[in-house]
Length: 515
Image: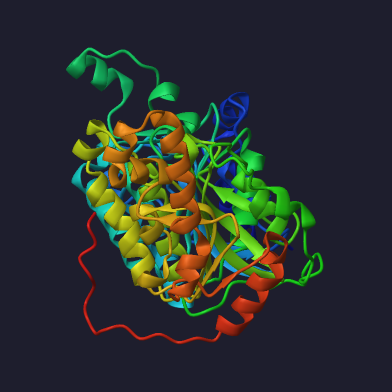
């Protein structure tokens, strides 16, 4: 004879698994989207998911406004493992109330966020929601406030990743914005504060959801997102790969793996990467990929502010954060967006004990009225503040141009960087040789029989006399000038020597960063 209590449990379990019902699940699949539970299964190691609060539903006094009750209240929450490490997560279920957030829905999310913080594990949000549940009124808005508060409290303590797999509109967009990384899917995920209809009514501008807040927009124009994927499966795979570089919390070190190639490998091709003509660009991404453990570079925000490169890699099996200029884009000049990009990445690495390696090749900050009026001083100061504030090991390599403020900002010795290297091709000066010659030798050039030839001669003299790495090395601002092919073993040796360093800072609540 069967036990009726077990039969009742089985019935409730079945209700939980049904979500919003077969028809709504079919509509979800018809859009090319997975269900919340399918996403959890795809993200986690097989068989490791443990669900929490699956039977939570609406309060009794909400039934008039919501006559249907679904176990879970539109969100799946729990914990599992990725590569054998515990993570907490929530997955909004669009088949139930459109994944909208109400009081109990928010309570479930807050519960796993509290557990993640308490246990020092990452928190992952799989977002697919129509926003606040209108019927829930202020309770829904209060629920968002509770979630936002936990995002802020958890910041810098445990990694937070948002994977947008559907809509995320209105105030709901602020929770992902408070997390460390946002992954979006082309064609199916979008995020904005005010939608196309509201914008059309208020401003008269006509735009569709994808152009306003889709994956491409936020990965190339706004800088809100960090990765874009062509499918949900790819997005979930990016989440798994990203976590492989991150510690579970701020008191752990990042995961170490056995080096996939020789730690002391030298790449002779690096000696020929920087062209003799300083106006000819080269690909800094190639430099990074030749220096780090083969195949380990994972670029972050690859489509936005492309004059700067940031991302994770491994050197000798240890995780490092890579920061660089990209001479192929705007000659690697620094501007408002690249300053913000560098600042945010440097601060994340410092939060989670990830050493920083900076490759420098920048002619300076981008001149122009738009940049000045847009606050380039304030934005450039963010990058300065981030490098100064960071207490993780910091190493810089000047590959070519390091002029003016860009030299100082990009992890110079004056900011407290531990080891500063330069290649023989480095040019370090207050400004570029051409501009410097125009100022220093203006009268001589103007009065010359051949001003162009005189200018060229004086530029050459200035470069050889002042804008070379040996002057900086003589003054102690460089620790060594190295052959480019030596960069990998030099970095690995330096990181090994710096790994256990301890730095103290003056006691304070927090600084006042120029945001």
